[in-house]
Image (tube, helix red, strand yellow):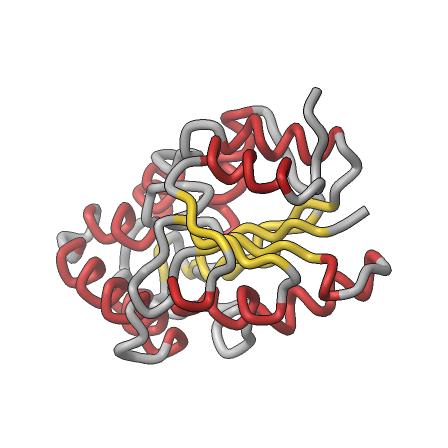
Length: 214
C-alpha cells in the first residue's frame, strides 16, 4: 500500500479556481499574473494567495458558487483516481486551492479521494471577505504529505507526489516518486518523471508497480 498525492489546479484540473472567481470580479487578468509569478517561484506562495483572495473581496456567495461549479477534472483524472482507489492505494489531494471547487469537480465525476487538504475563502453577510484560511497558506505540502504518510503507516520513500508548480516543490522533493505534470521551468529539474496527460501518469504508476494492469 502506498499514498499518491495530487496537486489540484494545473494537475488534476486544468481549471484555475482563482481565475474563475476573478473573472466574476473583473480581476481575472490580475489573478493570472499573480498565479504565474507564484508558480514560477518569483513571489512566495502565501503572499500570492493572499493577494488573489484580497482581489475577491465583496464577491457575492452565489457568484463564488457559480465559479466553483465551473471547476472540472482533467480528462482521465477521474478514471485514474478510481483505479488507484480500487487498487487499495491511499489517494489525496493537497492543494492551495479551495475545498468547495475541489468538491464540486469530484462530485460531478462521481469520484472521491481518501484525503483532501485545502484552503477556504470565508464569507460574511453573503460575500467573500477577501481573506483566505487553511493549512496550505503558510503550511507546505511536504509537511502535509509527511503527516498523511504517518497516518497511513507508510514511509515517505513509498509515497508518490504529482504536481506542476512551485508550491508543489516541497512534496515533490520528499516523495519517493516525483511526477511533474507539465511542470513549470523552476519545478521540472526536481521531478523524476514528466508527464503531459493523465494517461502518461497512469503509465508511470504502472511502470512503478503502484497499480497493476487490469
